[in-house]
Each structure stands twice: as C-alpha cells, then as structure tokens.
Length: 160
Image (tube, rainbow, N blue to C red; front, side):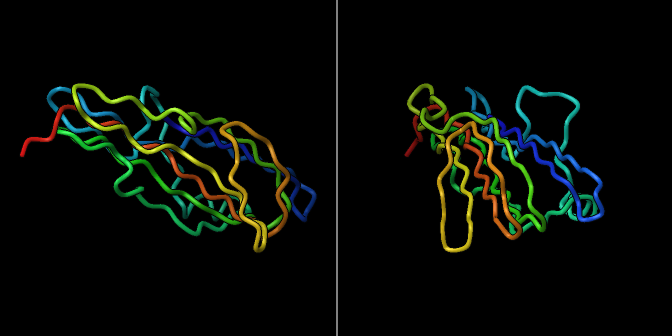
C-alpha cells in the first residue's frame, strides 16, 4: 500500500509550487519469498523523489527518511517493511493525503502475521494530531508531516 502526497502553495516571490509523490510501503510475502521493503507495489514508472532534490526544489526540510523497521508481518517468509518519511514546511502550504491500511491490516496467509497499519501525523508546535487516511489541511511554517506506510504481511508459520 502506498501513500499519495500532494502539496502546494505560493512562494514568497509570488510563484506557485506543487509537489506530488507516492511513498512506497512494505510488500507482502508469498509462498516462496519474503516481501520487499519500501517498494511501490503494483505501480509502474514511479520512483521516490530523492530528499536532496525535494529540498532544493520545494519549501521542505526532511527530518527523516528510513525503513519502518519491524512493520512487516512475521512468518516463514517475512513481510516487507514500510517507510517513515517526515518533513517540515518552510512556508505556509496545503497538504492532501490519499492513503489506505489505516484501520484494516494487510491480511496474512497460511499462518503468517499481519503487517502494521499506516499512519500520518501532523505536528504543530507541541500539538501532535493523528490524521485519517484521506484528508486535506493547511499547514503553517515549521509544521511537520510524519508519514508511516504500512508493512506487508508475512506468509506461513515460522518454523522452530
């Protein structure tokens, strides 16, 4: 499951900007293989935007970009881990998220365990808000967005 992140606003110089990205998640395991971590599942011709490029081109400062360790489900074959990607905005901006797997875990097969749910948090000063899977919000300078994509589910019972 991937997250769709759409942002935009007006720069101090009066020019508008927009940013769109899909954030990969953990892929589920199968009968002969473990899942892949931090991958764009069932989507072609898309890659992540390197942090260095995003910071140069957009009013964003990234605070974290890492695999979400242990978010994949357990089993004979492990589910892939999701991603944590977080950033602060440097000017007032609009943010829209379209995501899934916030309430229903990716299902597991043949005795494996489910991957962890996805989540999005908005941090405004001392206030940390857990957001729904689909929303739009106006952000102020220095607000932080924390994206945690779901892990894939494991497959099969883990052998002892």
